[in-house]
Length: 265
Image (cartoon, rainbow, N blue to C red; front, side, top):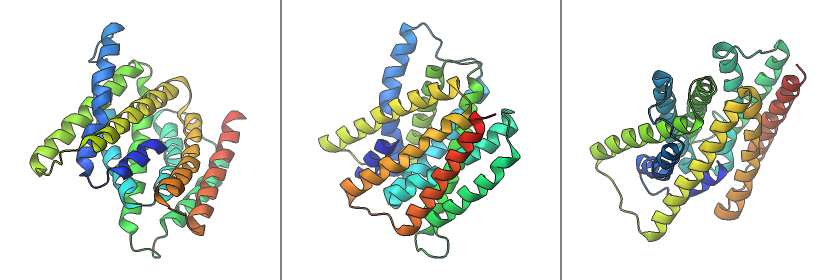
């Protein structure tokens, strides 16, 4: 996921909807071949939830890409790490995964960490930060849907639906916008890498959510803050400010405490 953010930032002069379109191409080529070899139906079983996963995915994808382009890498990725806390609540409501009252203070602590990163009232670029928060919710809803679909559909089918629905919607928008930029060879290579990183990420993520509770899997996403901080410093000379560092620490610590409660119950 951190490498996806890097590649998106490298081609930020492209329309976001075009970046989203190219992101799906490797998946659209590779996954159907694997499904054909495994003799798995492309169409899946639980079609309403497969379509819902695809819609949540494309909305989350576009809003996340927007934050990658318009915010420092560490800030954009840190805001995304509020996603596990949305997942905790959504998993309890829709998947009936058990929540504990002891977790509520940690949710509040994580929210405060998010405020330190977003810094409402203290920054001019508040809109991208709030778009990042919106993206976090849609991605959490998509991940909860993956967990629900584990009982009915193969993880490759879920990935395939996301890719084709995302590509279809983004291509329609591109046709209406009429602002497609023809990439040169180096840009095309970066866009190919974006699609490859996205495929690996989606495969790993979908497989993980089918194997373990959503609240447990989401914990490991906190490593993205560390990776994005390193990449942001090395590639874009971005140095996170003190409030971002403190806020990220709050979120990571809260996530760890929630993880300890999960494994002890």
